Structure formats: C-alpha cells, structure tokens
Image 1 (cartoon, rainbow, N blue to C red):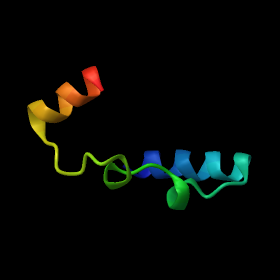
Image 2 (cartoon, rainbow, N blue to C red):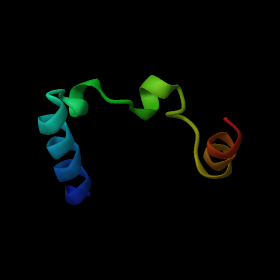
Image 3 (cartoon, one colour):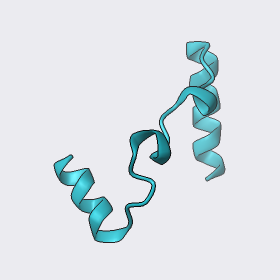
Image 4 (cartoon, helix red, strand yellow):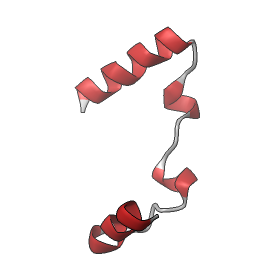
Length: 46
C-alpha cells in the first residue's frame, strides 16, 4: 500500500495536482457498497 501512495504522490508532483484529494474513490463512483461477485461484475460490465 505504501508503494501506491508513493506513486500517487509522485504523479501529483509531476502533474501539480493533489490526486489524493481530487482522485476517484469508491464512494465518488457510487460503488462503495459492492463487494465480491457484485464488484467483479461491475468492473467487467460497467
């Protein structure tokens, strides 16, 4: 997980955008309650 944060911060520096604040989250995508098979189905089919 720390590697992911480091990459996000590196990208933020390069793009001059705080991706940790402005990026997408499960909540913003409206899929925070999906789990398991339902999440996989959503990811495959949209």
